[in-house]
Image (cartoon, rainbow, N blue to C red; front, side):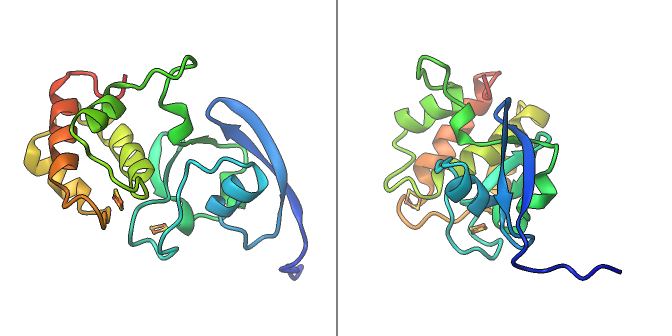
Length: 166
Ligand code: FES
Ligand code: FES
């Protein structure tokens, strides 16, 4: 078996928000670091780097994943979706983002991209989620600023809009 050199860089290519991207990475580079430092896509935040806080959440082939628990190489030839994809080309916020703005669901914004991406996935599968369902999913995210009340209000309103990910 060939031994992997941890410093050996390899080209990685995938689809980021519908656009073909590529860059070089060591085998141990995390997807979050690849997004932020190689591709310059800094919308995805990094907090604990241990899978706890949820701030790094992105979609891989439409499914919410912790970017800090995913190697960049694992995204090879897959579709990665980040918070940069949510607003329209003209900068118009989508329904989920608009609800966050309306309910003051963010302060520093550190947790926000991860929560938005988790619920983009969740609402796509559960468009009429109850508040209890929403609170259960939100349990996978830490916010140190808001006390969560505005976040829950925003998510409930977005869910009731009928098309929260639009
Ligand atoms: S940075 Fe990934 S879960 Fe905290
Ligand atoms: S708004 Fe600051 S961590 Fe959530």
